[in-house]
Amino acid sequence: MKYNEFEKIISPERLNRYLLANNGNTKKAMTLYRLNLRLSQELFTVISCFEITLRNAINRHCMNTLGSDWLKTGGLPNGIFDNNHCSVTKRTIQEASAKLRANYTHNKLVAELGFGFWRYMFAQHQYHSTGKTLLRIFIAKPISTAQQQYNQTYVFNQLAQINELRNRIAHHEPICFQVGQSIKNTIYVRENYAIIKKLFQWMEIDELSLLYGLDHIETICNQIDIL
Image 1 (cartoon, rainbow, N blue to C red):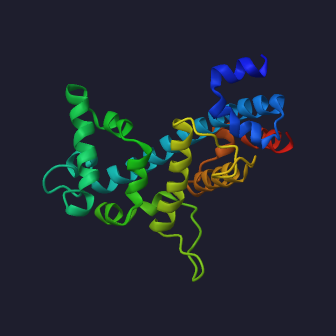
Image 2: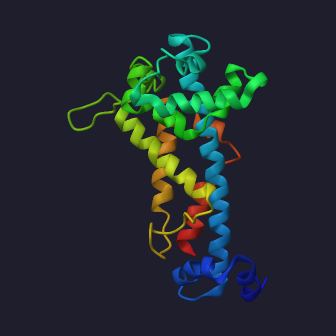
């Protein structure tokens, strides 16, 4: 496809950043746009696998410590999330439960709640409400030192970075640039990809086997870097 046809479909405003990053080279601009799409597809798949792994680990732990219907009961009056600090968590559970109506099961409720909900299980008040034990899902987590605390705040912040990347992809924002600039750069992606792999490993998940055939992120990043 010729650039003027491609630009008409995608829009000059959207393609301008890709054009600037390639010094006006239209062929490279189209190639970078396509590579960004491929990278977004790959990362969204990997993040989806991570999200499912994380929420299942949290759910298994809380079922063992809080009961088999811990989510729904936690959002009820006098439940673990029935306090001013966890009001959003409580409301999210109630809304998800109501949406399921007669189709409600605990497993369906778990699946109904998004990445942001599970990330907030490591926020201070939610972490305390569930018994201050959720870090146990990270079986291989390093021991904290005076220089680096691997506490629930650390995990919350790491998950926040992954959540931000997920939302950027979901809203069709490019991820192949230096943040806020029209400069081709894969550091942002590589850093977040490293966080995902690290947290998989902390949960003692063999991420290479889990993502076999799905993960070509490093390859695509290399293609972007040399373009």
